[in-house]
Length: 113
Image 1 (cartoon, rainbow, N blue to C red):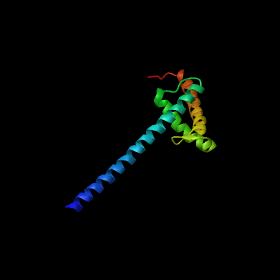
Image 2 (cartoon, rainbow, N blue to C red):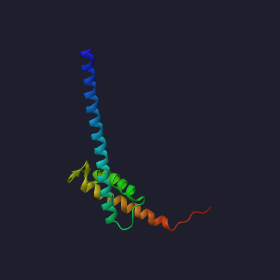
Image 3 (cartoon, rainbow, N blue to C red):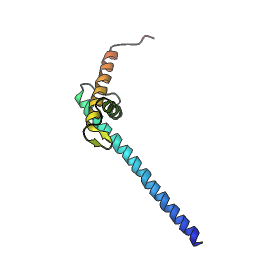
Image 4 (tube, rainbow, N blue to C red):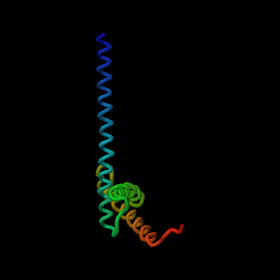
C-alpha cells in the first residue's frame, strides 16, 4: 500500500511539472505574438496607409516580417521573446509596403458580374 501511494505521489509530481512546462510554452507563444504585434504596429506607423485586419494584420506582418528580415539580413540586434527586433522591423516594413502597394493598385478596380 505505501508503494502504491509513493507511485501516485511521483506521478502527480511528474504531471505537475509537465503542466508547468506546458503553461510556460503557452506563455512564450503569447509573448512572441505580442512582440510580433508591436513590431507590426511600428511598421504600420512607418509606412503610409494601413495594414488590413487591424491588430491581426500587424501581428501577421510582424511574424512574416521577422522571417523575411532574418532571411535578408540575418539575426542582428537584440531578440525579445524570440523575435529579432531589427530584422523583424525591416521585414515588417517591407511587408507593409507591399500590402499597401497591392491595396492601392487594386483599389480602383471593379469586378464585372
